[in-house]
Image (cartoon, rainbow, N blue to C red; front, side, top):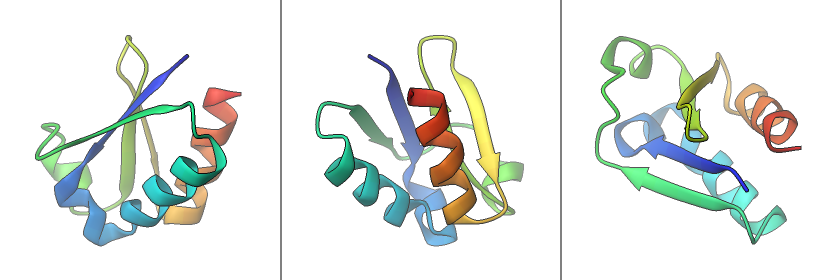
Length: 75
């Protein structure tokens, strides 16, 4: 099972909706919210999340795009 980490500061870009949608659709999925993930330049421009132990960064220009990419990553 993969873990997804979100930056709380990125929620204003639309990531909060992705977090909630995946929480409802995939109840067994581990999701964590952190105050800052250290990707500040990306955080101000796009939606992003960090997936898995390898800490793979997944980003998209829209929240919908991010959600599609995350669903593909988690299978």
